[in-house]
Length: 292
Ligand code: FAD
Image 1 (cartoon, rainbow, N blue to C red):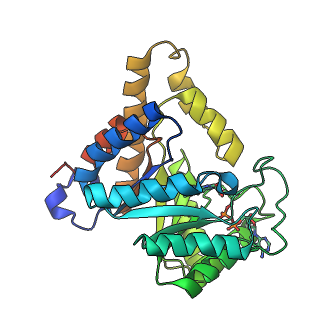
Image 2: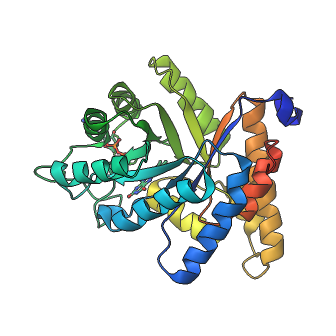
Image 3: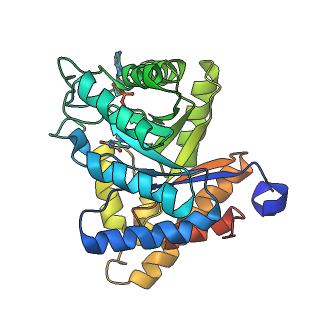
């Protein structure tokens, strides 16, 4: 079983960690504490999200630049094109370039009213993520990641449309896709089959969401169209006031998920940290990664 191999025999394994820009001093302390604990795991990159409509533009840039200078780990800035003109978005891309940031996670973003609402591009803006990728490519030689949806993006009318859209983003110059969180590995594996059948050869890296809080993650999942399986809800039922058992169940669920994926031949993982290090550190152990 691949999941029982040692790290030494799996040099191809790649990890990345996603963070969000902290809002308060206390949150910023936790952010850096987690970065400093995860950086020694030698991730391919650490990424920092971009608030809807560019609300975190300065903070995203500051965090990404500082991650690189403080830890030496490569950092990626997320970028969205919702609610902004091409000139405004291009200025942000040039700002990343000037700060020596070579990686971008390129996204359309959602209207402020939420993901379920129809998306209207800015009249002078990029039309969608594929258009944004092409724009980034015109400006510089960035490593570009894009989003993929193992349960289909809620606005794709059918699978064909969804996979065609992923293909357009990769054809426009993205290097890899990173998936939305999912908890049923069969959804991801079916999605890979669909993408490969459509001629997509780029890596589609599974986005793994450790469950720091079942209540919070269920809320996120509902908003972004990811489903929570009944078996998972049952495992967390009644643990709201028992953080220790909650954390043990969460670690077991994510470990089970990545162990299965390893055994299916998956070698790249993107972990949504929510700026916390404990479950991400535990998962890295399952992947044979230790600090150093
Ligand atoms: P797109 O790829 O543009 O697709 C969106 C929808 O439009 C799809 O249904 C697609 O099929 C359809 N579509 C696109 N082009 C066409 C076309 N020409 N014709 C018909 N249909 C079309 N959001 C943030 O605000 N900040 C972040 O930092 C952030 N990071 C993320 C990271 C990851 C890994 C993921 C998976 C999501 C992230 N998101 C983030 C959320 C993302 O912005 C939303 O999921 C958004 O709804 C879609 O973005 P997209 O880049 O996938 O859009």
